[in-house]
Image (cartoon, rainbow, N blue to C red; front, side, top):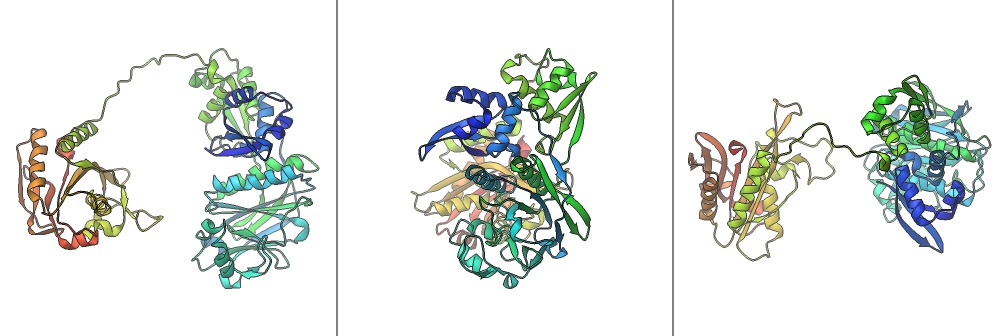
Length: 561
């Protein structure tokens, strides 16, 4: 849940009322947000307010105060309009492998104050952090339109071909020079988004002036100031839907400062797939049954007209027609996708504290799953045996389950991550052993012997399931000391089987290459193999940087559920 910081006096001025701290906290609760903290910075009181993650229209004081004023019946829901503009943005096919989507808009005849200017910048930061996922999905550039000339071009060039003066820098640099310098600045986390790619995205004007190198930095030439009157906004993204949400949000929030409030100017975006006018700023309607909306939220006593009035307070202008309610969803409410979203807003407007508590008309009897019940019993038994439980990552590297365990076929049945963030998390584990061995390696200085265990899930490929994979509950135990301790894990196996009241089990010589030759055994339940135990091969120990001999036991609990 994102948190925004707003100046108390500015917010109160926009709300047209001064509240006590307690009253404003109640007001926030009624509106569906939370006053998280009240702080004083440089003798200025600021509110830290938690905002729902999908309410991008509340991430700035403009949107927050506007929505609260509508909620408090101090203003009507404004109508956002887009007028045709003359600016054009050409999207070249070269960006398809980097950041393929770009939209733009113009805000004309704006009047910035220091407060609104800072809010304009902070909204971009919040959008970058949240829907933009730290600029990896969406990045925003804002420019003084009077310093540049259209048509604009969005293209991708080799890093060595890119050369301009970055924002707040004193000299012209090439892209590699910028990246080297920015490694020591707040821009460092964003460099990896495009670094290493053969081409970098770039936006230029008709004269070749660089507007921005998304998602890293804008150019100094077109930076906006308090004196800027006409703002050119460009949004580049890897996701078309998020791209449109962001441009709609910025335009709807700050078009109130234009000479014609709540009006922005479109930009023609041309690409090989066609031509579109942006920002979309679309309105759509949703037909809902008033009684159904109330029933789902446990609300009683509202007529269709009252339902429409309550939804209008939530920035969803509505009108009742018979028993139906027509809900208008504007460009600020991209979070409303289904009827359940409308039901939630109705409950907020009605007031959660006003909903009568009711006992459900159906019986639901909860019970612990048999697999978890068995797992807890096994955990207790192993703890009584002197073993310490560990909890390791469900993801591991490809080497962890294959070459490190001397098992070349392990990857054939492993579920692999399509775009792993790091080499440490490439596949879903098929064995608990790598995690326990890593734990033993990191605790080499602990008193001997080390007796560790884990009871958790592993995952295998499966053609029989809808997801293409299946979970399997396993138990793994390790003994590490001055001696191998094979008799300890063998005795542990007998203790586990005794606790399960299972006598139809046996062991036989194992061919597993992770074990010393002749020092490994398969565990059989009847004639079915359910696991193995043995003394680990020195090569396996070396791969996990363990210098002491280790014996391990790993088996499936599924047959006992």
